[in-house]
Image (cartoon, rainbow, N blue to C red; front, side, top):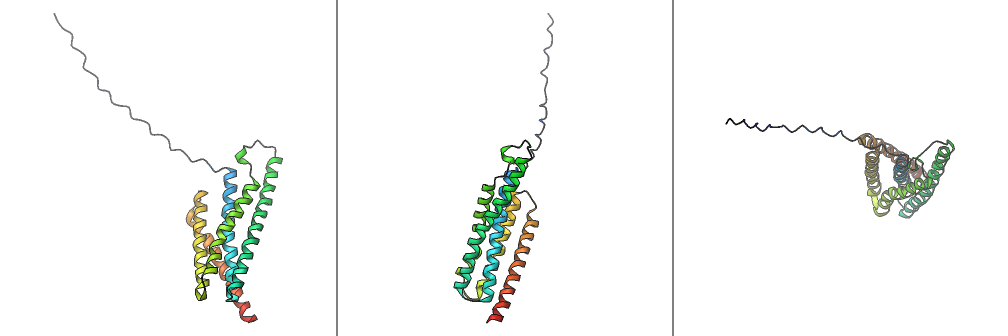
Length: 199
């Protein structure tokens, strides 16, 4: 009796898996950009404005009391001014959003309280480094140390802000460092000139 040949097992090749399409990171929301803008601007403003004041006064006088007093006044006044200005600005933007009657998600509506708070906190954090440097370093090294600390802080905040906003880091760092360096140079020159003439 003839036997039928058994079919040979068919070797099947595993079908290649289709690679998953790369996921595109979601674009930052309006609330995220609002917080980021307020925080970065507050930190940069705190660093530059307070550093410029203390460096300018240090160029006019060697009195530690005068320099620290000017720096503290700049820190307190700048914090309140930055928070209030940011709150008013974002409140106007929020009013415009609500008046447009457009259908917006909650995370698309800007929040003036968040912006004002982020700006105030960032201003204080940014201002502390140049303020503490000029208060703790005495003698001829005071101004160079403050300038170096200020430029380092500006580079860090510029890089962090660009990273969070998914922008080119090098361009942001160069922009804020050059702007801060120019501000420090001008205020120190003015302070030195006035100090020389008054003394």
